[in-house]
Structure formats: structure tokens, C-alpha cells
Image (cartoon, rainbow, N blue to C red):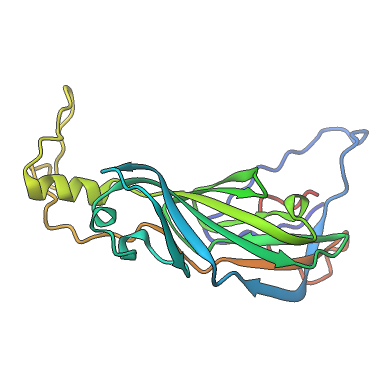
Length: 218
């Protein structure tokens, strides 16, 4: 038997077998080492895709919604922006490291040292990054894609005809035609905070188990 600890919003696929001669890695648990740090400063932001287009690199230093970077178009765009930062870590052999993105609006693709780790689209926005880390300096890049809500509300405020569907209607909860010009600007991007936690791997389920992210297998 194995024990799992699921956080709110999380789901896993657990594969079982009808016979006992299957060779699989031993199930792993993790124990909190008490070491965690927050990546607070040195961030930059660059839009990889955006409508309307937004050029240049923004030295935001600390994390924030991209609607707060002082660029008017960022308050009414839909697109993907890359948050980039370098950080240093003393990597301990045999330990795993968990990256937690905090508040994400709305999905994030994670890269560590140029290697793709995975895409996170629901809470908890946590993933393992131990195998991608260097002992010393590391580059973290997070491509965040927002919802189209800010772009839609901007279209309706300016009278832009975006409802060009042939076979569906855009209606409210009462099935009445509606405008979205009164919508307030929604946060977009990565408000964070972003943290990295060191954990110890163990085969003993009686140890204090913490969430490992992306399953418990090594």
C-alpha cells in the first residue's frame, strides 16, 4: 500500500497491478528539511506574445501582476509573458527541491536553466525541479498566459466587433445578450511569491510527509 497527501485542487493517476512481479521504483515520500527561500528580487518581464503587441524588457525587480508595470497596453491585453530571474542555491545531493509559484494568473510553463520542467494550470502551482538545478547559479524562466477577459472588456468599451461566431451566441447567465465593458481589470501574470523548498526523500510513510508535487515517484 501507499499513502498520498493531496492538496486542494490536486488530482493524481495511481496505476495498480493485478500481479506482484512488476518491477517499479519504490514509492517515495518526502520530509520537510526546514530549508525554504523566496526569490524576491532581480526579476524581469518580457512579452513573448501579446495583443496588442508590447515590446521590450521590463525590469520589474519584484514580482507583480503585469497590469501594474506602468504600461497601459498591459492592462487590456491577452498574451504570454516571460518572468525571468537568476538565483543561487547550495544544492545538497540526495535532496529534492520544490518550486512553488504562489499566485498564478492563469497558467505557467516553467523552465530551469533552459530545460522545460512542465506546465502548471491549476492549484497547487508546485513542481519538482531538483534534477534541473545546478549547484550555484541557476536561471528560472516562467511563461505565464492570462485570460482574455481584459482584452474582451477593452473591445466592448471601444465598440470593437469581436463576436464573429457563426453558430453560437455570447450571453449572460440569463441567456441575454450583454456587454463586458464594465468588467474591472483582472490581475495577469505572476504575483507570486515564488519559493524553493528543500525536502528529504524517504521510503518510510511514518515520517512527516509534505507535498512533493507532480506525484511522489523519484
